[in-house]
Every structure is written in C-alpha cells, then in structure tokens.
Length: 358
Image (spheres, rainbow, N blue to C red):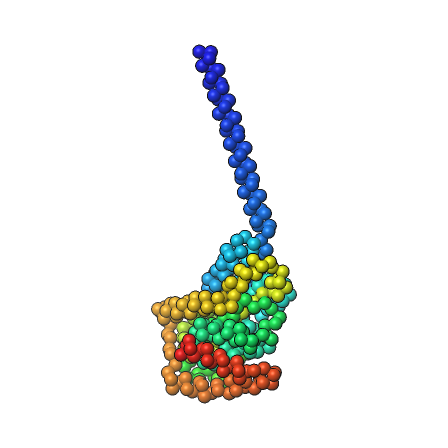
C-alpha cells in the first residue's frame, strides 16, 4: 500500500513535469511565431495607394484592391500596398500632385483632370474614337511602349494606363437624342475635350468631380452627364437618372502612377513584383474586367423600371460627327503648336483601336 502511494506520487510528479515542459516549449514556439510576424511586418515596405473612388466602388475594390493583393502576394511579405480610397489623401484633381510630392506612393488618376500635363494621352477623349476599354487601353499602353508618351510621363513612374468604355449620355429628367437636344442642358464636364464637345453641342458645362455627380444631379445642379455604365454603377447614378443615350461621345485616360523616387528605393524583388503587374499586364487584365462590368451595369439599368436606353441611329450619329468634326482638327492643331506629334499619335491609336473595336 505504501509502495502504491509512492508510485502514484511519482507518476503525478512526472505528469506535472511533462506538462510544464510542454507548456514551456509551446510558449517558446508561440513567441517565435509572434517575433517572426513582427519581423515580417516590420520588414515589409508600405506603399500608399490613393484613389478618389469610394472603397466599395468597382474600380477601388475589383481593380485597385485586387492589384494590390497581386503585388503583395508576389512580394511574399516584402511589400504592403495599402489602399486609401474615397479621396482621403487628396481630391480627384490632386491625385497627380500627391504622388509627385510623396503624400501617396501610388495613385489611380484621371489624366484629363490634370490640366495640360498629358496632352497626347488625351487622344482617347476625342469623340467616337473608342467603344471598349480593351481598345482604348491597348492603344494607350502601345503608344507608351513605342515612345510617343515618354515626355509627358517623365515626372512619374508609370505602372499602367487604361481607358473606360465609350461614354454614353445619362440624363435625369429629359431625354437627349438629336444633337440639338443638348441646347441649354447643364452637363458635367469630365475633361477639357469633353467640355469642348458639350459646348459645341450647345450645352452648359459644369465642373463637378466624379464623386459629386450624384448630389449634383439630385439637387438639379446637373441635368445629365457623360459616363460609362461602370460609373453609373459605382456612383449609383441609376438612382438619379432615367434616360440613357448611347453615342460613345468621348472617353477618358486613367493612369496608375507611382512616385519615381519611391520606385527607385525598392529592392530588386519588390520592383519585380510591381513590374510583373504593370504595362499591358495591368491594362489587359483591368480592361477586361471593366468591359465586363460595363455590360453588367448596362443590363442592370435596362432591367430597372423607369429607365430607357436609346441607341443613336447611323443617321443621328452622322449629325454628331459632322458637328463635332472640328474638335479633332483643333486637337491636332493644338498638338502641332506644342511641337508634339499629334498626327502620328492619332493615326497609330486608330490602327490599334480598329483591330479591337472594328
């Protein structure tokens, strides 16, 4: 009996020592993991990615957010691209400045918002040039690869360019079809060329940043706006518009741009991951998603009660083209006056776009 008690005490002591050893090893293991996590976090270079789009908007969530995830995964803990959406780092017209000044490391911006900085890239804004994002985006990145846009991109490290699908007309209360229907209408001006287009049609141009379009339409500051269907979805404009006229009246050039010094400061692995998802790799992937989203949002609008989509007939389009023809001529003259090869850029853009859009 006495021997049995001794054996029991010994057994309990051994169990106690075993548990203590296991706990000690477990604590050591967890501490190691925690230390490794801290080390990894500390060693990751954070890159601030700015956009004025709302966090849940298509471009912010499905394009920029997904792009950041691709880069972060590629860098395997050496990069942490963190998105700052909703314009928290700067308003839409300031997206270029916040990159060059180092407030943000990367920004997605509308090049047309930056007055005079990207004259040749504005070729995509000319009326009736593009229908799809794929065509416009391929043209822009090819023009860059072939050296046409080197000078205007010299102040930043360019990650990629893309365009939207063609811009259609979205109206609050009145339908526009014939060019004469624009007379006196208050229309949002997304770019210099778009402003000239609308003025030529007799509309009154109103400068409103994209995120403010909903409120401006709701309060009557605007009667309508040119936009692709993607933006109608992102900014919920289907709640404040009823009539949609398809004319592919203009477009816009977008750039994913990076601070040059920040890019130079990255090591070879980090640069490789940025480069892997740049240029045509970025624009081809992004434009495919954009065109699909555009078609999806058009379908949503078409199936929403109270909405009407009208497609301009060939005869009506001929009227638009006749009235707006001087805009292309004026753009070419402006480029020539600046010593830029506008003729070469437009000719090359048309060649590329025709292969895709037909």
